[in-house]
Image (tube, helix red, strand yellow):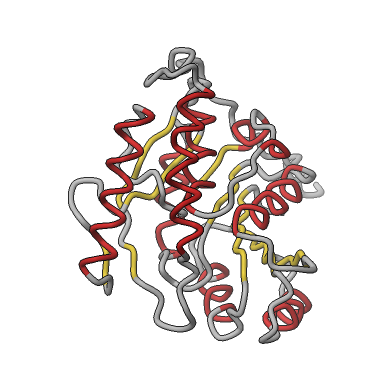
Length: 265
């Protein structure tokens, strides 16, 4: 069993899922994939089951209705925490996030509680977005920074790697947001606990197949969630506790193998 799990929520992603699964299986590091399917009418869940039947590294969690990205990830997190994974990823299933970045996330996670993939660290790395969408995303990032005080360049991004203990520090049942506000909320809750959060640059490519899940409701939810988080933090624009400096939990040590028996004399 790998210590790394990549959670991919799906809704009508049957064209993308086999390719994204193969890319993950081909990585130079060993990972497992959890597909969280929201009863996709295009048969994505069936495709996921077929992949899981052929590859023991692929798992499927079927949900009965489409209730939002946040709820899908919460279900995936609970599934992961019921097992022994140490590194737990959020990743889109439409190739907007490049699976080849996973080794870089893992390297950064060796000294962090949460690693954020940033589209804006050291410049803009977004492909195939219209200018209006880019301006909205950049404005949202600045808005979150101003209201909450979080220093991160891309707080709404959805490519993340959590250390196990970071997810265990969250009350997952108390997380109510769903869209971009879900990403902001999780990061803020860990940041105000003094968790170590780092960003690494990624290239974000707008999906080539299917349709974007962006809606006006998602935008409005994020707008008001930021103020709610500020109030929850006692109207502070800094963490409640200093950032942790204690050593992070070590990766599980490999089970030692006994030395080979000496050849017979």
